[in-house]
Amino acid sequence: MNWFYSVNGQQSGPVSDSQLDELLRSGKINSNTLVWHDGMTDWKPFGTVRPLTPPPLPNLPSENICAECGKTFAPGDLIKLNGSWVCAQCKPIFLQRLSEGVAVPSSGNNLWRFNKRLVTRSETVFPDRCVKCNAPADGFRFKRVLYWQHPAYLLLLLCNLLVLIIVVLIVRKKAVVHIGLCHKHRARRKQGMIIGWSSFLGGVVALAIAGIFSSGWIGLAGVLILLAGSIYGVILARTVSATKITKENVWVAGVHRDFLANLPEWPSS
Image (cartoon, rainbow, N blue to C red; front, side, top):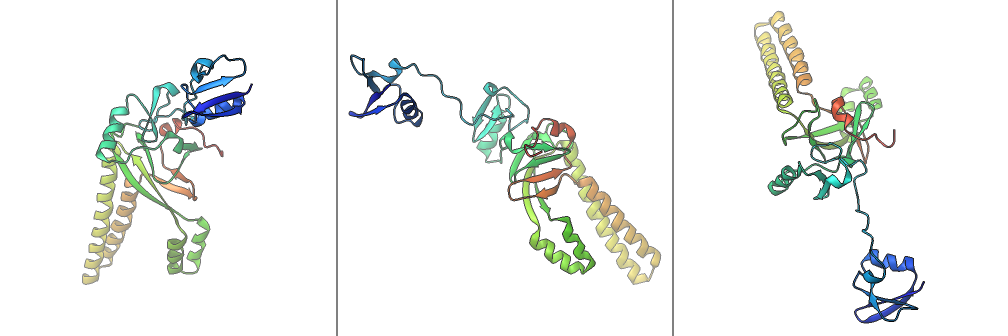
């Protein structure tokens, strides 16, 4: 069927049914636009001639995941705020973040699971759950800067340590993620940092004293304190690490299995 339509007093056409629908979707016409086709006695508003069906909601999240809490919901139970899909329960928290200018979680579509790892994009703000135990993070986000280079570069250590360091600083890739941490793991990380730095400084002092008094035992104790304490502190304070970084994505290790269980499968797996 051939249609004619009138916009701002100017008649256009003829157009087919599909072309008329495209004009409606593009916003060039609306339900009040006057239309006419052969057989009609007069021009009538488009909405009275052809009943309008509600257009599909744009950009519905494929996995229906709330960007704040990371839980799965039916599409009708999510609302889009500042480019992210949020459930009704998380809406007040999300809006408060926006008003305070705090980084807000990205869409759940930015997070996937791949075996025991998490796949995401740089600058993604994680849901309001602890990545180490999946407990509520109570709005806390820790900015974690991740670095990665191909393991093959470590072979340069056979040549020269200085060369390895220079090459790694040049070729390494960087990604930033904003992870949630619960009170327990925040305290654990702080404790690890205190132990690590205290052990390092204590070991350096012990080595200095050993040098002054020419004591091998004090020197050995200083080395043990420096190495053992620093390593233990690093392990205690560790959150997540990158196992691979590309231009588009970053693969993250150290995420709790219950946190991963709420995420969709990585499409490339």
